[in-house]
Structures are given as structure tokens and as C-alpha cells.
Amino acid sequence: MMWSYILKLVVLLPLVCGLMIGSLYLWRRLESRMPGKPTTRTIAIRETMMISPGLKLAVLDFEGRRLLVSVGRGGVTLVDKVEA
Image (cartoon, rainbow, N blue to C red; front, side, top):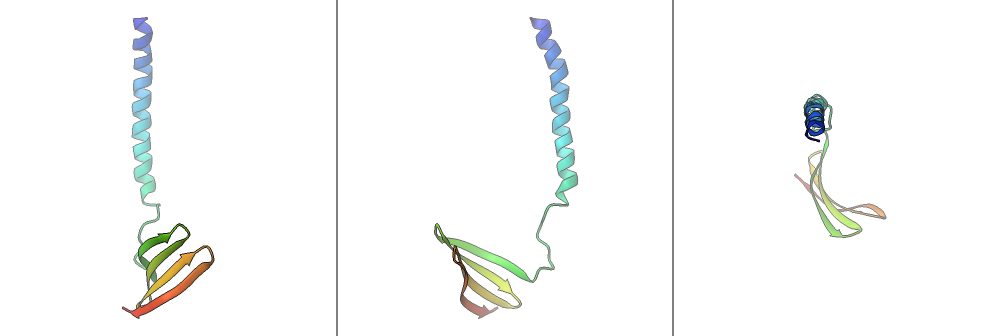
């Protein structure tokens, strides 16, 4: 009884540790390929706010202008624009 426990421990402990180390290694290698915040984008979402379950307000920066848009099931509507 005790020997089977020790045998399982000797086999499974290195396996679990190897899986943990392998997943951390893969995470570090693939982290650079994940989408980040590129600096060359011409549009940026500054803030969003949920108004109701089907309606959201968003503040966008686009070509020196700040736009307030309403996003809903029916589409996107421009609410206001201000020169930044």
C-alpha cells in the first residue's frame, strides 16, 4: 500500500513539475506574439460605458478629434465630436 503511493509520487511529481515549467516556457515565448498596444494606430478607444444591456457609449480619438459614439444592436451612431 505504501509502496504504491511512493511509486505514484515519484512518477507523477516530476510529470506535474515538468508540465508547469513547460507551460511557463511556452507562455514566455508566445507572449511577444500576443496583441499588445501598438503605437502606430490612428484610432484609439479612450473609454467605454455601458448605458443599458444593448447600448454602450465609447470615446474615440481619431486624427486629432475626440468622438463620442453610441454602439447598439442597430449600429454605431455619432453623438458628438470635439477637436482634441
